[in-house]
Length: 235
Length: 145
Length: 122
View (cartoon, rainbow over the protein chains, first blue to last red):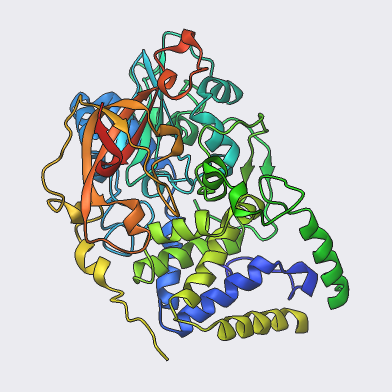
């Protein structure tokens, strides 16, 4: 982490934020008091570095190719996650799941007449173990206020215009279940391999604000707010 | 150079003048008979419960993560891993207990961080004296370069 | 100094190798509602904390699943895990939640989870 890359010389007082000072103070005190160890913190950080949307994309690709696996995914998301390398209970360093994400994944199956989209109106609950860290826009009060009541307007802002006869189902992730969307397999993907299919299942498709399309392998281009001292993820 | 302490105090008093509760009233701390059921519910609301509130479209953006934000997330999860709190206690404290002004006014992980500091004191793992001294000490490291 | 002693390992002991909410399975007794039941969300006082959104209060929805047993958020938020209850996934028509929702999109829905204390037969 902080040792792997170049750091500027020790910053002047204006250059360190109040959050950085407080973060260091809290972490050091917690370790000094034995509430957790420096090694716990390092292991957790390393665990977070392994996370991202690829396992969820692979789950969708497998479900498109294998009807039996799709049934399993819809019935028992936690069990189906094992086939894409995610053990909700034992992959995190705790051995009892991540404290904030729990162990109850539900895979929401879209059909030609039902489109799912996920929000957490109360905070920003998100299936980190299989999808990584949530995007900033997902955490905004704006998205949380509006998606649950004006989903068609919000989806249009994300570039999705849906016919009136399609049911939009908003999943409000408010308790211990975490959701990913299993979109409809798009036209033009006949004969594709699991790897090819997984490439077009972007994070945004898995949240439900985008639909997979052949040739589209990244989230829509959006402005990126740069960090002052960014985390460098290896993947 | 850094502002002098007195300059900071004056600037602070000016900033907080603009921080207002959700309902603007000329006289604050009202008489009890002025609080009907609707106002009681509004003032005691949980700040996190925003679903269905009207808002205008904004530009959807991505954000790079700050190192301290990832560290804060790891600290909060380690505190839960080792039983200092559970995730629901954390959410209650960082999304509701802190009140609407801080809820809407601070960055996402800023709330996580303040809550992590608070739990150490509230559950008597650390005295506030120790916390304040530690913050002052860390600040001093940067000031000395 | 008087310091309250907490057993910091109580959750790890219960959930290690099992997971949460799996570790509360079988502790809530029989589920009061079943798939397909029409339920109304009670307008309980929402002082201090809840995860049952205000926008659901008084609305009628349909149970799609009894999903798991867990302490209610209102209790777990103070680390009280003594009384798990059933949680249900409930689907509401948007039109039921928001009277101004356009008739053109009458099929649109919201699905969310509520614990048993919040529900009564509709």
